[in-house]
Image (cartoon, rainbow, N blue to C red; front, side):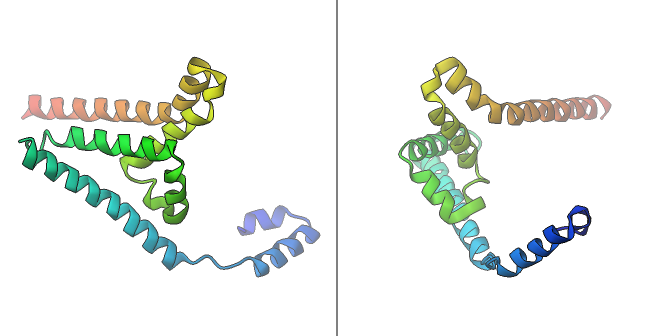
Length: 157
């Protein structure tokens, strides 16, 4: 606990925090980092394999193969979430499943599944976009600013 927070506690609370910290099990950081790296990397390898498949079998270019690759990864993530498997993978790998696009799809799908009993509009739609809304707004604003900067650079150069 930070020193600022410890100063605000009573002496009894400080003693309890000291005892609790002493008995808290150590986290296996190296194992957690390794699992996150391996599983996140595996998701990216699957994505790269899908992109190569779209380029080889369907004659996509490297640029145009990205969209169907993302769509397949998102679909697989939502399917695994619906089957309850993505959460198990997430418990094993931690942040390795949260970083790629599949983690974002999982978070939206799990919110939709969790609130489906409240109806499609207020339950699924409302709760699904509580999380996604901020990400979408940030993405749109960032794209607008980057597009504006690019337009100014092109007009200036």
